[in-house]
Image (tube, rainbow, N blue to C red):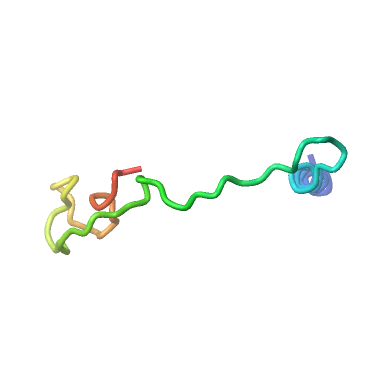
Length: 70
């Protein structure tokens, strides 16, 4: 598979998803993601010590403990 073949596949996929005028189906549209519980973050005091999740490691402020973890 060469670069031209990959470009042809990508262009065909974009055309298929963006404008599907050959059928009666509407074109595929992304589902709007306004708010989901997995995106919420809790307000915790800053930590300069060990990680809340893994106490053997120093906190690097990744935010994992402030969320549901996914």
